[in-house]
Image (cartoon, rainbow, N blue to C red; front, top):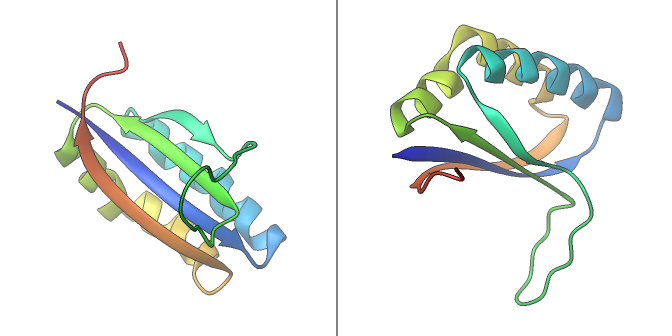
Length: 98
């Protein structure tokens, strides 16, 4: 079963976040992740949300998504984001998009 890494973000320092995004993209590719949503226009149709950016990445499995997050490559990328963006992330099992 596929897994999806879902992040909601408010960027406080754009330069640092850009460096994080560049490095995270390399780590995501290494773990065979595929961006499904990366920013873009959205509209809240019900409820409340305090985040300005949404990201969804599909991984081959739940375990691989967790390996990605805990990898030295992603943790290094994350160090550029820490303290420079408000971030809420989850990994969830789901159906394939194929």
